[in-house]
Image (cartoon, rainbow, N blue to C red; front, top):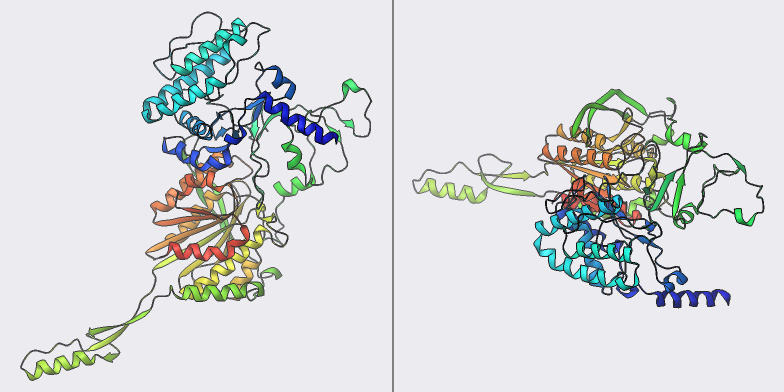
Length: 637
């Protein structure tokens, strides 16, 4: 009863506080694709991914009802850093759904026309006055005015939309007659900057007891923020990505968090809690507590993190056993695959230096050991045979047919029509033709395909109660080989993983000159997940292998479950840009790359890598084995 009354009271007071229009709400996940295409079409950085922004306290003045309801204490503001454009996870601040949708598109347009890093990126902005000013607020003001002027000048068609948004946003801002004089003066300047961008040079300082200004939702809070992460951990004020985004089969929560680095704190025993009510810690505060189950996985960790507003990260110097095995250990020589050769040096693209680093990566080719019982020759698994028979029938239609060519100089049979015509010509005194034979023409498809599978440790995750990602990839490679047996096309099957740039592991499961038989199936059955995903090096080496094939069409089919990443710098924007350059190099050499992924977030970065028609996202991972051959059929028509 108490919970029911409390819930009803919360709904009543929140509705009375106002400021939100739930029926007009637009979620980022519903407009993410449209906003991404719009942002890149306007010339925005194609390497930036779209993600949810953090919800932060703003400190602005709130009404009495808002304070009673505990509403509008935090707000999610758009911001941009070197690798991410973050937009609010939901917008319901304007009374019409169309206006909230337009607000998303306007934020994308402003981000596509960022000012210079000094904040003075437009000549219409006047000089900063010598009087005392609020430096942080002035920088935000000048950057957004410059970006707004740039956007309106480049794309005049969006000015009418901008004017409608300005009127709607100002109508939701605090009334001037309800604000103290100093705050009202700043509010007037902000409204003037919205109506006439470039007309306000700076914002004066507020008195010590004054409240902050209401955030301007038409503006980005930052244009040149530092990206969080790196080898040193997250810095203060950074952001973590959405929880659960890397878990196949589970929808992302689309929630981001602020993170900060905490220095190592003295240990406190978990069983001793002094009872002092004024000293009790909240769940969001960081404290190092010694627990005996730190090495055990927590199935509810993502849900617990989603309930926190601020995540604190620290390094304590302790080694967790599972992390050591994951990051450092390699299989012993007796258990590992057989290395073919001394290693192959490959280049890598460093987008920060705009430079191709020659011989920066070392790739080793491997094949399963003949002594590995898991790689023993085997037949197609029973659960795949029915699907294989169906694919055989479907792909048999792609097999080139035969036809008789008439009137040939040489052939296997006489062309009776041509013989009759020749006899008639000879009898009438004409010179007969010597094209008297039929020839049976056998047409062949002049193409070669290499299927490259991601074998990183992320493929060890479960997609259902019965199968892991690696099991789905294994079945996909087996059925792909069975389907191509029906067409007679030349194909190869490979896999890859990596541990930093010195150890990229390239597994050759079936070469172009090898038969797809029980031995090849055994090698596929022996694949196992391990390590990381240095995709650029794998694409470069696969392209070199395809270069050796004398086929008119060469296709590189990539199976992946996530973004390129590795233990070193090969993560985030670095890995994305190197992979993109590797794809461009492959296309320049006549290879057609196509990526099939089960990563639900793939649409946010794959268009930048492979182009709008160069990839496919499979929402249900267990459909990959049956759909992979279909993608190949479409590519080879």
